[in-house]
Image 1: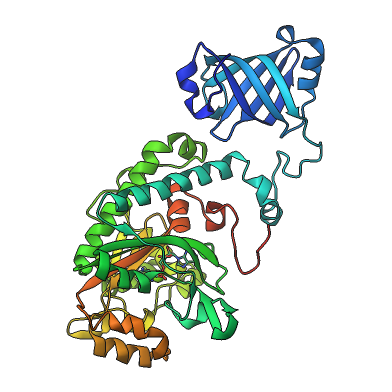
Image 2: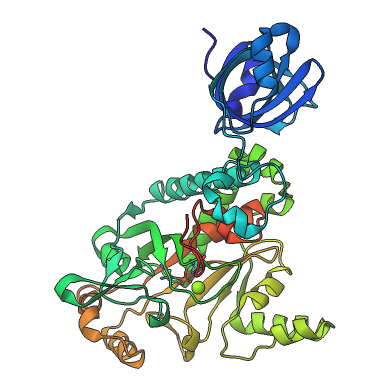
Length: 447
Ligand code: 4AD
Ligand code: MG
């Protein structure tokens, strides 16, 4: 019996007979030959059926096989540079073929251009297509690389709750749900506050899970449900945090480049800049970034772009600012020291400059923008209490969080990396909705 192989391993089987279990993605005929592009979950490979090799009835059936029919194919592998596939360059000469199910003829995602809304309505089928498949394969490698690095650098994985009593990242993007006799509960915007409790027991920790934001923004960078990994470390200041971040991001990018060559090639991703990702990353202050933006704006002739790039000190960067800024860099760039007024309540003030906080965002190059938000946290009890009042947050809900500043407070820092934004940068995809299997946006909870 020939072995059932994965298409991703096909190169190891040249000259041997193998079995593929998969689905027909495309079919073309040329006289006595039928070319099937078969996918098996691990790749796409061309299988060629020759009339003389198969019983007449079976060959007839193969000639009429609808897209998405499930099949078990046995044949011999040969190397052929012209053969399409992921990885391309290998072909299976069909010796036997079993149709598990001949798919219905009305497959909605037939091989033609589809509008985005149509494709998203059929996301359960769209994920079968090579581009979507490749992006989601990169995603799984990115997630593994994230865990690998943290697990091997002393970070204890701690799960943090999804149903929470209070806001972490501002009250405007909270999803709320009635919670028995306890009033309202909110879906977690971040596990950070719990991470901060956990470091006092475990030193360095991370949480990794779905995160919810009722974002009104309809940009290509925002989802209402996304995955965020949040490391947090005790005895760690802003500089040390940036060192952790650049090593961590480098490991993720280099792992994806090494393990997802076929996927990235199939997406047409130019990986030359990604290959340069290595510490140190450039570090610029908010003030310097603002100056760069003013220069970029001055050079712009397009009035619409000029309007979009308008900014003054104290304002947060929007997507157009981040895009313009990161087009100037070939590596990810740290922007630190944002105005206190645009950042969350828990950030440590800059020494001697309270209008600035010890925050740092990591912006991905090539116009991708923020993939990480992080900061040093307030370690003083009095200051934290004052900030809760200033931000009009319910102090009772934060009593436990205040406790952390009473019993052994230390300088500590952490950050959150968005999986979808990171994957869209690595894969070169414009809109993050393609980097998660079932995207949730303001306009979409189906399928
Ligand atoms: O900058 P953010 O809001 O930071 C926090 O939530 C901190 N509590 C993290 C921490 O310090 N532990 O979000 C962090 C990252 C962003 O840089 C971005 O990559 C991603 O989460 N993100 C989103 N991704 C998709 N859709 C959204 N609506 C996102 N909001 C944030
Ligand atoms: Mg942020």
